[in-house]
Structure formats: structure tokens, C-alpha cells
Amino acid sequence: MLMLNRFNNDFILAFLFYVPFPGQSMTTTTTNKILRPLFTTVFIVMVFIIIFMLYVKPSSNFSYNQVEPTSLKNGAKRVPKTNTSLTIVLVWHWPFGQTFKLDNCSSAFNIKDCFITADKNLYNRSHGVIFHHRDIARDLSNLPQQQRPPFQKWIWMNLESPSHSPQLSGINNLFNVTLNYRQDSDIKGTYGIIVPTKTAENFVPPKKDKLVCWIVSNWNPGHRRVQYFNELHKHIEIHTYGQAFRNKISGEDYMSIMTSCKFYLSFENSIHKDYITEKMYNPLAVGTVPVVLGTSRQNYENFIQGDSFIHVDDFKSPKELAEYLLIANKNEQMYLGFFKWRQNFKSHNYGSWSMRTCHACEYLQKHKEYKAINDLNKWYWG
View 1 (cartoon, rainbow, N blue to C red):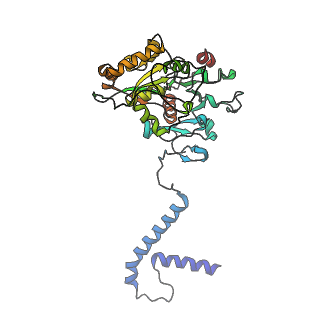
View 2 (spheres, rainbow, N blue to C red):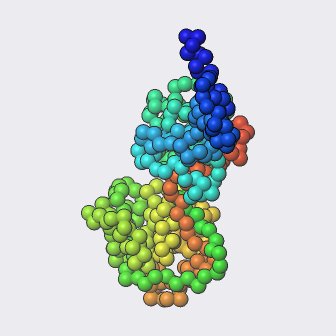
View 3 (cartoon, helix red, strand yellow):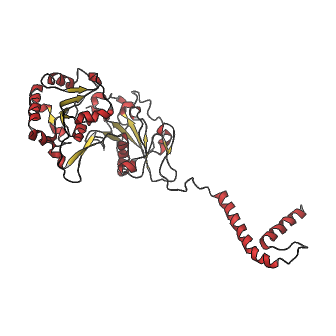
């Protein structure tokens, strides 16, 4: 063993300094003087490489500011450990089981430092948890059972009207924030929005080959819209589409059919304050005049210019409305008057779940104060 250690030591000295072993000729002294610094440098570099590999473990892309989440099962995302400034929003229920993009707040909506996830393992770290009302069990059994972190806000999200939303007795005092279509909701969840154009435009509606159209799937004889239609179509031709009329159309045909009509029946399935859906915003977007049935005209005008649509309540009967539409059809100047608002504004669809969850994150970033909804049932169902 002593001889082996001595050999190792002699070998290292020989490698580093080229000290000749006993009996070795010194005729290569000049060569050694040249090679000695080179081999010493190589040895030192090798030592540093070994130390670096042992103690430093870089990420696969050497990016320590990575904020894009790692995909998990069912569309969930894993929060990056390196960024502690992110606002984490947990989607507890996929709305109606529909998945959607979770990582586009910055790229699509210019909302920074948000991390949207469906990974329930991140519950204790989430600043906000979104619950879709229509997916909450009546006995609330599918809500979190563990204690809520003190910094966490529960967000009640519902875009359906009270008529189509089951009232749950146990939801009072559960939520901190509302995300809804109503104007007095904490987070505005309207179905669309009227936005200004960058420059004034001389808008000309596209060519039309139909007078009045209606696309509908949900047919309920008790609905006011069905009762109104049954009387209206006696006095004017209405082109009907959708499952209710056994004339189903594809999603691609939906907007093109609407565009081809001068007037579109934007009849809501129920009548409630602020409940104005894509049934109005879509025809506005494609250059068709919506004939609305829903909340009051005054309420509609909180969202859109009053000369851009026709309200059924402006007429004493469906017959009188039909007569007005026939007159507008023959009077080009009268018809074009419905599009004056398009010189400076346009209709923008506001319907994606991604946009709503990103806006929820933005709200949490701006509102750190404590807030609670003590009587959600009274606020929404009255």
C-alpha cells in the first residue's frame, strides 16, 4: 500500500511538473519545459469541468426566468418554481366540461404575470379559485373541502340568466368575487363589447338576399320569444334555421347566413337585467340589424347606440313590427341609417373562457383588499 501511494504521488508530480522518475534521462528537459504549462492548464480545466458537472445542474434550456407552464393531465399546468411574482388562478370546474387555453393571458390579452391552471394540487397556492355555477353540485359536495388560505379569493362565475341557473341555498357567504354579465358584477363578463375604431370608416353593409332570419336551437313554447315569433311570421317571411326548425347548420355557415340577412331576430331565451348575449353582438359585427327581444330598450342602450337596433317593445304588436321592417326594406336611406354608428365603432365578441379567466387574474392583481358576497342568492335571483 505504501509503495502504491508513493507511486501515485510520483505519477501526479510527473504529470504536473514533469519531474523525471529515477533513472529517467534528462535529455528531454527542453521539451518538458514547453509541454509542462500546456499539460498543467489542461489538468486544471478538466478539474473545473468535473466540479461544474457535479455541483451545477442547469435546466434543459438554461432559462431561469421561464414562465410557460408545464403540461399535466387534463389540461392542468404546473406552476414554475422560479417565478414567485405570478398571480395563480385555479379553474376548479371546466365550464360545461369545455377545456380551453390556459397560457395565453400575455400573448392574447396583454395581461402579464398570470398563471391559469386546472391543477387542483395547487389549491393552497392559488390566489383565486374560479367556480362555474352550472357545474356546482346542489349539495356543494364538489367544492374544496380543505380550509381556504387567508389570501385566497373564491370567484363565482356564471354567464347564464337566473331563469337558467339553479338557485343553491348554500352558496351565501362562500364567494368573494362575482364574474357575470351584469354591469354591477365585480368582473365584467358581458358577451360582447362595442369598441372604437382606429379611424373613421364609411361602412357599407354587405349585400343581402334575405329580409329576416332566425337561428335557434332551444325551442320552448312557454318562452316569450317563441310566442312572439309565432305571431310575427304570419305577417312577414322569416328564414329559419337551427335544431328547433330541423334545419341544423354548421358553425361555419352560422355567420355567413346571418350576414346574408337584412334583419336578424336577436331574441333572448329569458328576460333579465343586462342579459344581452351574442345574439345581438354577432349581427352587429357582420353588418346585420338586430331586432331584439329581451330586457328594456333603456337597458340595451347602456351597451349599444340606440339607432343601431330595433326593439320589439317599440311596436304595439308583431304585425306593426312586420310592417315597419317591410318599409325599411324598400327605403335604402332608412336602412343605411342603422349603420351610422359603424363610422366610429365596431362590435367585438367577448365570449372566450380564456379571456374571462385572464380578466379574473387581472382583477386579483388590482384588488388585494378583503371582499365577500354575503347574499349571492338575493343579488342574483332577487
